[in-house]
Every structure is written in structure tokens, then in C-alpha cells.
Amino acid sequence: MRTVLVTGSLIVTALLPQAPSPVSGPLPARLADTGGGSQLVTAVAPAPGSTTGRLTWWDLRAGHWYEAGSAPARFGKNGLTEGSTRKQGTSTTPAGLYALPYAFGIRRAPAGTQLDYRPVTEDSWWCQDNGSTAYNRWVEPLPADCAPGEAEHLVTYGKQYAHAVLISFNYDRPVRGRGAGIFLHADGEGSTAGCVSVPEEAMREILRWADPARRPHIAIGTQSGELDVTRY
Image 1: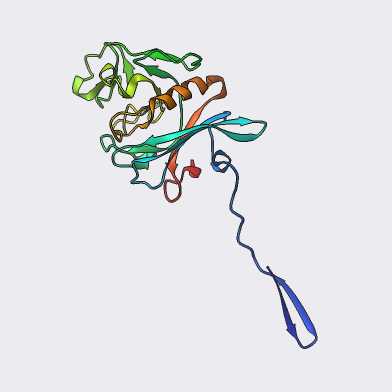
Image 2: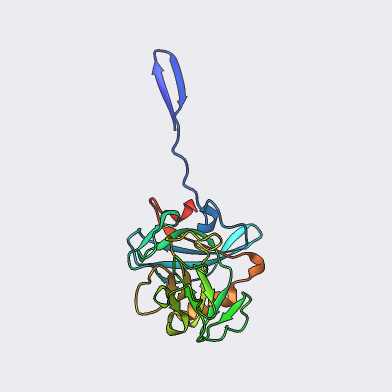
């Protein structure tokens, strides 16, 4: 803003600092990082304690992000928390930016699915035992050092794991006690134990859309505040 001060015949002009203009554009353009690929999923909750929000998947074309689809999302029954300090067993969804390495499901992959898709069988488990060498890994069959009570028998989650994608939270270099088995999956009866879920048809659309050659990632966070999704 420019102001003019008049003192006798002296006119002094001064430039006052202006507030920075808010960053505009689609959500991916406002993120600190999108994973370096040309596909992105954003899962955004209104606040850290929210159990519902919105999931949107985006394409980067000619330097601009375009919305490819959107669906209502569900989060952990205790809301969201910072992924780097999350504790196992808290039923919180880890905020952060994560790769989407592969998909799996009890049902067949939708036609057009390009992600590596693993069929769930009676022998398919996800080990969450902190004492196991298979911690936070898909195993077939359940290894001796992974207690059945500390593992998910995937085939028993008929609705949720009809179709799912692994979210690579605590996956590449697992930290014991931080959490295991965080997925993007089809809705169950309510909020999740820490995963992100969407209606099954939306899950199928995401599987038809995701292209591993375009390095899809997911950014999880809130609309503002400490877990603001634009931080990741």
C-alpha cells in the first residue's frame, strides 16, 4: 500500500509491506513435495481428530495438476497423527507422504489395473509382531516367529481387502513399535484402525487409474494446522 504524507510543501511517499498473497492453484501445486511422479493421491481430513475427509487422485500433465477423481474417505478411529512419531496400536492414520508400491485383493484386479496386484489366499497374512523378522510384511504362510494374534489374516477382511493398495508407511526400513499394515482399502463398517478407506467403487477406479511408471504417491494430512497436508 502507498501512503502520502504531507508536511508543509514536502510530500513524502512510502511503500508499506504488503501481506504475501496466498498460494493458489490445485492442492498438489501447494504441497512441499509430491514424490516426484506425475500421479498423486491426497487424503485430507478437516482436523487431526477427524475420522472422515476427502480423498482425491490427480494427474500432472504439461506442468499442471488436474483432478482425476474424488471420493469420501475414512481415517483411523482416533484421527490422524504425525507419521514420524506414530505409535503402534493407537488407531491413528499416519500423516505424511508415502509411495504406493503394489495392490492386493480378495477379488480379482479390475480390468486395466497396472500396479502389481497380489491375490489374497488362505495363506496370506500381514505380520505386525514387533519381535518377528517379518515385521510389517506380507507373508505366506505365517512364519513361526510371527504370532497369529499379532498378524492380520487378510482373507478374513472380506469388505476392506476386496481391493487395497499398500501405503509404504514404516515399510522400507521398519521401525518396530511405529506401526504395520497401513493400506488404502475399501470401506468396512466404520472408521479404520489407522488405514485410509474409500467406497469400493472408488477403490476400483483408483486401481484402474494408478500407473507405476508415473510413480503414484499419497499425501495424508489435514486442511490446516500442525498436520497440514501441504507440509509433506
